Image 1: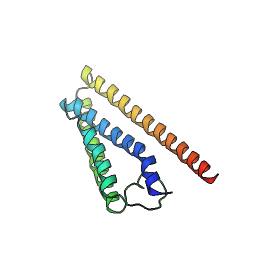
Image 2: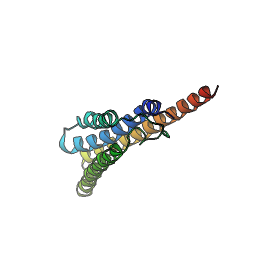
Image 3: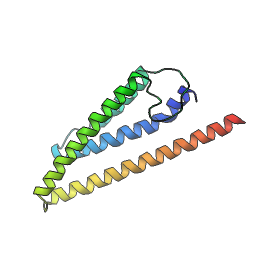
Length: 145
C-alpha cells in the first residue's frame, strides 16, 4: 500500500490513541490537581508533528506504526512510554488514596469517572479501527476492479 494512503487511513486511529491516552491521563491529573486538560492537544500535536516532519513516500503494510518511518518510530514509542508511565503513576497514587480514604464520596466519583473514560477510550479505539479496516477492504476491492 502507498504510504500516502496509509497515512490518511491511519490518521484517525492515531489521533484516537492519542486522545484516549491523553484523556485518561488528564482526567487522572484533573481529579488529583484540578487542571492540565490541555495535555490532550499537546499529545495529538506530537503525533501529527512526527507524521509530518519524518514523512517519507514509500510502500508500507498499513498499521499503527506505518506513518512513522525510522527515527519517528523511536520518538513515537518514547512519547507513549512517558505518557503511559505518567498515567500509571497517577492511577497508582489515586489507588493508594483510595486505600486510605475508602469511604470518601470524592474518591467514589473519581473511580466512576475513570472507569467511564477508560470504557469510552476502548470503545472509540475499536470503532475507529473497525472503520479503518472496512475502508481498507473497500479500497483494495475497488482497486482490483
